[in-house]
Length: 399
Image (cartoon, rainbow, N blue to C red; front, side, top):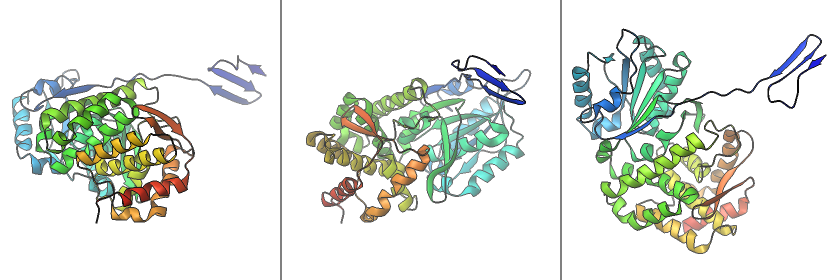
């Protein structure tokens, strides 16, 4: 028998015909973020500089665009066509621009990802080609999932166009689709080649979609940044009135907090039990499921936050003042904090078990003790959680 130092993380044990080897190794990634305006026209060099050219060849690119963006911004296809014409000597943009459904519908019907994969195959996209997804979080999730599967990983560039994607989802290194009536049941971890937040695209959002991303801003503020929460409080009515100049800097701040968490937090692939940025999300995911994924994610997150801050207050973690401040901020931003589906409280609370499975077997949920101060809990008092959900019904303007 031969045993190497078992206290070393790199250790081997040889016993007869058997061999056991444990070897720890690291893989380095580059997480690239660009924030700009009009990436296909005024600042096209931002995208061009991200496209590495193979020796003697032009970088091959295929583009997928969110149908909701096309409806809201009729110029986007013309801008892409002009980019293709202008830079055809530098970039091989293959095939037609592919328009795919926006919103949760694209994540809930697996036919869409099959079509994306087929297009990747038909256009002979290789691992050093580029797939560019343009749109909101659902489209970026789906196209990114396909890019992560094809050839075990094709370079994927996210061009985020919604407030939700700018402030939160585009910064992550994961992709997902809904399955078995569960949110993000299928998915992968895959660091995108780059993220481009095109802030000019935010001007084309509907009011509902514009507001949607600010629930994630509130979430980040509650967990990590009291001054951001104060700014959201003070500017809630302006944000709800679509004041881009006021809202965009707050989205940037939220996005950078998320970006720093991914790159510096030590657990980008969520290998540990805790998911520090998922405050309010167990309820949000369950409520989306109960609404057949017709409820926008950001609006579901706002309700999830309201439930969890109310629970924190009922458990004595959070003061009455900060509890009411949070609910008032969410309402001022334009969020409704109670829906008829929430009358089914037992079904709502079953989302805790589904979230536990999604986390890896141990329930670990972030909680707050004050605005900007968080800690983890591993057990839920279900009676208090019922009380929290019922509280929102009694204080709601819902009819």
